[in-house]
Length: 170
Ligand SMILES: C[S@@+](CC[C@H](N)C(=O)[O-])C[C@H]1O[C@@H](n2cnc3c(N)ncnc32)[C@H](O)[C@@H]1O
Image (cartoon, rainbow, N blue to C red; front, top):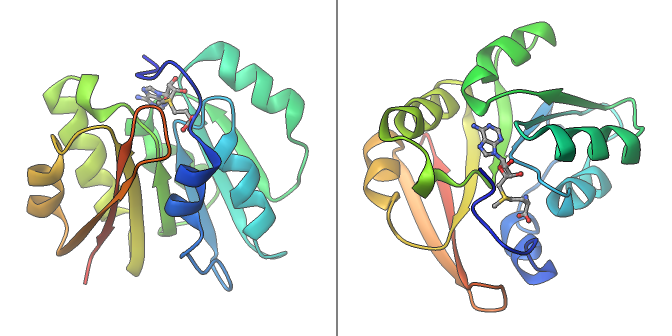
């Protein structure tokens, strides 16, 4: 379910998040936060009026995040990333500005993986961005099929080294 043996490094966190401009973002979504390495950085970057929706499937990680984070801009939900539309409608928000994902897409069943990526695209604002890291290039084909623009960068300083995908609708 986790797809990794150690939490991501601060170098990967920077590569995932530092280029994103959260100013004026209404909603940022994080899928698969685990121990919250990216969550903390997202919160630091978040505008006072912005919201962050965090979705984690694993009960232990979910409870740990609930204990660690008390910020009224942040909503933490236990469930699957495939339920993103449901969690967004609970917040009364139609589109997200950024979706940051650490989901272990490579080990998810193909249909679920496809559904999550298609739904992420559907739920993004027209100028929004979906950011995902992976240890392989396995999902590149799917990302290119679903999103209009896909770029890939490499982060060597992580165990294991990772690819960071930035996917846009336009
Ligand atoms: C590779 S870990 C990433 C953790 C952390 N963000 C990091 O980079 O160190 C993947 C996380 O995705 C969660 N996860 C797996 N399948 C999921 C799903 N369908 N919906 C939501 N979270 C899921 C796992 O429980 C785990 O916490």
